[in-house]
Length: 187
Image (tube, rainbow, N blue to C red; front, side, top):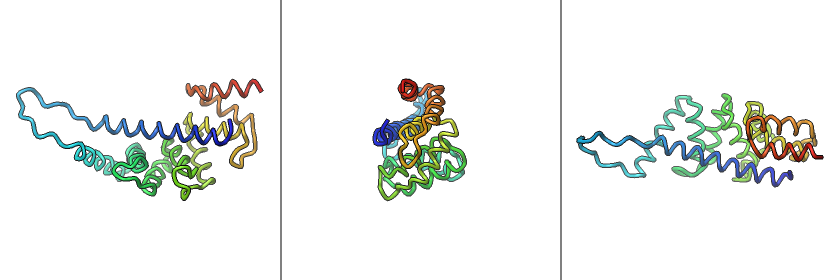
């Protein structure tokens, strides 16, 4: 897998992960209908619901909840309520530095500079990609495996390391790694 393809795949995977976090956050915002016979309060507007949900997540993130820190960063990254990559970086870093694998993977993507070249930081990208991979994040293992397979981004080509990473991700049912492993074994 070429480095542009690996980075493109990382971009797609990160987009799906961020969308998943936003969908999960949206699903948590739904409230049950009132009991029959109970008077109904005026329904809050969608903007009010989003603001209240954002504030709830922000409060939990400030209390140190790692999943909320990840969600808050993902919201800032996606532009809800406004795009703020510095805030996304801050909150992902808070969670990643305490071991949150998905936050580490998201930071690795941010540090590729593909979203904003001002955030390009190869050393930090490798740090967080390796952290996510070591934590068992199959997507991170796949991306890192692709980099080792190609000798990309300054890494020395290492088919043994690539094979081990693809195998680990494949063991976690990550289909692209199973395919990459088959291709690697053919060579």
